[in-house]
Each structure stands twice: as C-alpha cells, then as structure tokens.
Amino acid sequence: MKVGIIGGTGGMGEGFAVRWAIHHEIIIGSRDIDKAKNAAALYTNAASSAFGTGMKGNITGSDNVSLASVVDVLILSIPYDSIQYTCSSISGKIGSNCIVVSPIVPMNRTESGFVYVPFEETKRSAAAVVAENLPNNIIVSAFHTISEVKLKNINESLDSDTFVCCDDQNTLAVLNTLISEISGLRSIYLGPLSLSYQAEALTPMILNASKRNKIKHPGIKLVS
Image 1 (cartoon, rainbow, N blue to C red):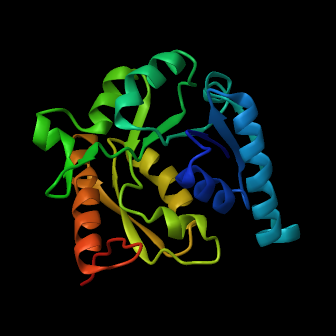
Image 2 (image 1 turned 90 degrees about the vertical axis):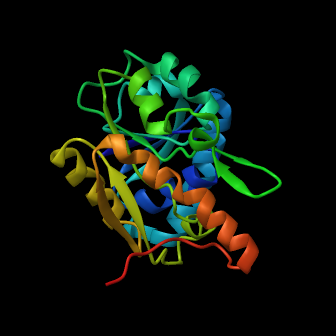
Image 3 (image 1 turned 45 degrees about the vertical axis):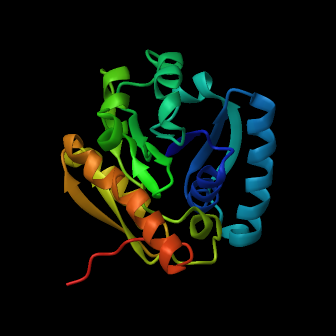
C-alpha cells in the first residue's frame, strides 16, 4: 500500500512513517521537496535500524501535489487553518479510490486551558471542513488522541484507542489494517463522519487533564 503524509516532516508524520514502513511504501509530503526528502532519509535510517532485513517497505519524499496523485491513503497532518489552502492545492489530483484521513484537531490554548475551536467559535469540525474542500473524495477521521511522543518512539506500545469516523465499512477495514500495525493501538469505530467533532474534542480535554495532573504523554482507552 502507498501511504502519503502531507505535513509528514512533523512529529506525527515521523511516527507514522517509521512504523508503517515495515510493510508499506511511505511518501513524505511538503511544499518544500528538499525538506521532504531530508526527512524521508532520516526516517529511513530510523526504520532500517528498527526493522533491519524485516523492512519490506520504504520511505521517500515528494511535494504535496505529486504525492496526492499516486497514494492509496493520504494523511493530512496539517493545522486546522491550513485545510482550505492544502485541499485546494491537491483537489482534482487525488485518485478516486484514495482514502483521505484527517487527524486534525482545531484547538487553541487560553488562560483556562486548551479549548476546542468549533465549540468556542461556532465553527465546523476539521473533518467537515476537509470533506467540504474535497467533496469528491473518501474522507475518514482518525488518530486524534494518540501521543506524538509515543508514536515517534518505535519501541514503545501506545496502549490506547483511536476513534474512527467514516461513512463506509470498506474504508473502515482499510484504516483498521493500518491501525493494527501500530503496536498497542486499537481502532474504535465511533460512527459516521458527521460525528468526528466528538473524537476531535477529546484532544484538548486530554491535554488539560494531562497538564493539571502531571500525566506524561497520555492517550485514551475504553475498558469494560
């Protein structure tokens, strides 16, 4: 499978790339292709050290537009305010069967703590904005509440859940495959894409609880 990560030079991009490279072809995307290639080289070294001869995939760098046209799954690891710009640059370039994944959380930090922007400013969820700007593509919402620090540490299990919102069970099956390849991460289907705001809003809550209770790199996990 070809997995592209726009905004892949950031921490989450690194974590996804290194962990998934054992099985898949990973393409790091950036507006600056040299930055993407440099990041890909660093991630390749990390993945090779971790997996050795067991690594069946690879990691390369590309510009965002070129990447979008060739991947099977596209992760948008970008800020909320960049959604419209990024989507406009790749709209019409994405393959008809490509799954676009939004882990985007619109939040701000205030005197009271982290807040979820759509609730505070009467705006739409990140997934809703992505879907509006890429109306002809398959959109999924996932990976909002995982620890970036743990994700980057390939030797550490995440021991947490991620809520997935999408409108198609076949799409969910593809995402579940990728999620299952990240040690300690479990997929929990939350419902259709319209419920993405529920998953997105958990991130500021977790960060507030983490700071006030001195909990390092928290995630969330459902227990019975």
